[in-house]
Image (cartoon, rainbow, N blue to C red):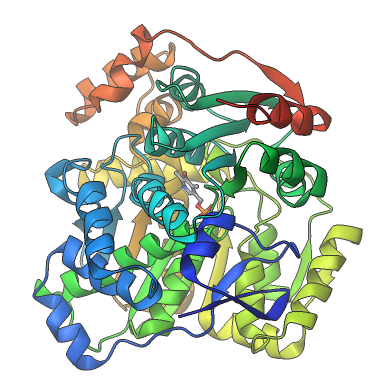
Length: 497
Ligand SMILES: *Cc1c(COP(=O)(O)O)cnc(C)c1O
């Protein structure tokens, strides 16, 4: 299996190279040359496997330059002991037709662990395979959860350094503390004066900057990315959609071949794109439900075909979705335009130059066929958390509540009773103040007193790694302007170590 760039179909790289590079030099994103299909026989044999074996099978389809033994080693060490019950994904049934796919049982309590526990392992193997650079410098922009999950995944991983930038005022207190207290000799964390989009755009520029690349090269280093622009981030996410579908089949909730809906709280369009790839591989899907918060640029895009970032940016209680430039949409446009690199590049130029583009009628049509898009503001998010808690005694976080809310709205409008998988992307304890405010009238104190009170009210135990954050030493306090990201990177990475 080889890989192309969304801005150059003729590019032909293997999977080790694309995982190492993260983003193509032409600014495009790497995509597989075709999407492999699962046959009915494949599905039947996958049903009998556990999560890790399913992952190995699916990885094998995409990482053809990795040996089975290498894939197996990565999967085993990533998923064996780092998640509760050695399962990256737990399904909880709510009511008759909805299934919450909890993806936050890993070390940092957000779904990003599923990909970021394995990406570093794949990357180290990829580095040895290509034998080009001896050290990878992982640059990461985070809207809150990627940063910590990447730091945790790369902590003290041989031959890697990681630098994480987060919007200084755009992440929750818990998210910030998780990053500022990170252990490891190879990690650096810095706040940015600006929002996530500023941070992500500045970093994308550094990646492809010739001078920066040259400086790193002198020290035998090369950039890579832990953001969902890296194919190695998306691939592990495809696995949990396929695995969860099969889980529903083996629990007799659906029949093999029966269609499901998948609802995903969406920011950078990575997680829902993985659901789209799972569908293309053969998982029967009726609708992909794209749920946004007040930053509803995707809701508008999927219903009108016009992507326009010229709008107010909101800081919400679901901060990991406070994004106006959803990078992974580029991959969907590439698929929807029948892999037309020139057309895709045209849209991206429009975005870069005017913050706006309008897609072709063909793409508009496909978007409507496959997606339903909706959004939900903070008020509705809180109401949904309360409703779900009172009805099912189930506590969900703010991001998950956005997805449930948009799914409920979809059901009301369409009367569609198709069984639906809803991605639950973070532990409610990652956003304790907002969740507590939603379910109780008590005075809201700081994050840690909110965690305690939430435990008392809900009976759900808080993850120890969040509770103990209070006592950890803060290691990183730097804040820089977005204009200074370049210099910060060169200063931290442009040296021998
Ligand atoms: C990152 C994140 C999202 C958004 O996922 P994308 O892949 O960026 O669309 C949603 N919820 C939580 C909790 C997240 O951390």
